[in-house]
Amino acid sequence: LLGNSPATPVVGVRIANSSFEDCARSAIGIQRGVSQLVITGNTFRCTSCDQTIDGEATGGGADDNIVITWNTFVDGPGAQGDYAIALTSTSRVAITGNTLNRGISLYRTALTAVVGNVIDAAPTGPGGLIHVANTCEDLTISGNTLRRAGAPGPLIRLTPHSGGVCGGVAITGNTLSQGTPAWAIYAESLSRAVINGNKIAHTVYAPGFSAIYDKSVVASAPVNALSIAGNVITGEVTYAITLDASIGGYGPGVSVSGNVATGTFFGLRCS
Image 1 (cartoon, one colour):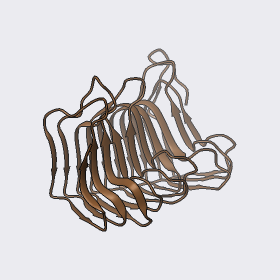
Image 2: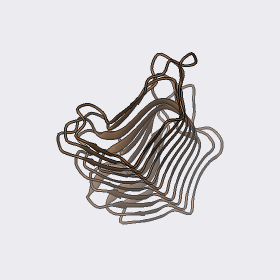
Image 3: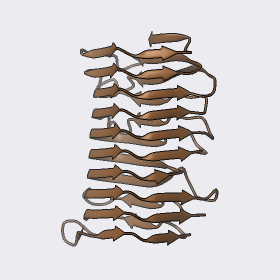
């Protein structure tokens, strides 16, 4: 799907109830100028492809109003990279109710909901199963069930890039099973956010790591207005929660309350 916004957009496409078998590169490619796209009820089988749904709105405006829902992704060991869905430069996106054995990657996004997906994956690299980078505004990651094996890395990762940071984020009500020695939720310079009501289980020993980790790495963007509450953490991880000031520091309105941790060596680490 290739538009050239605003002169020649691709608007109002629906791809539904189909089976994509062994695509050579990607099953669906989304380029710039795409709006009002629905991808629903499909089965994707990839043995050697790159990202199954590959969105790169490069060289133009953001892709807008995209729904990816109720699809099944079955990617074989020859699939390239760790992500079945990868979107760049998007706004107003809903990724809901999908079943995947690779992850979801979001780069430079706004008004995005990742809700009710099931990801059971064994990545080859350190990225998150839900991996968010660069600017993200008004992002919801809620009600997902994530299980990780393979290379060590987090289940949910939010990281700045090129000076862009995440804000207005809700990470709530997820069920996270961490089967590698790493964090469960890893964030850098995350402000105006809630990390609430998640169930986190570390199933392998994770010495030196935290279940929930936030590090302030951008000097011009100190962490503020952050709530970490009501999470239940189990398993042998060194710290339940870490707040790491690094070079950015922490500003007003940071709250850690009502969390429960068993099996950890320490509850809260402030560095």
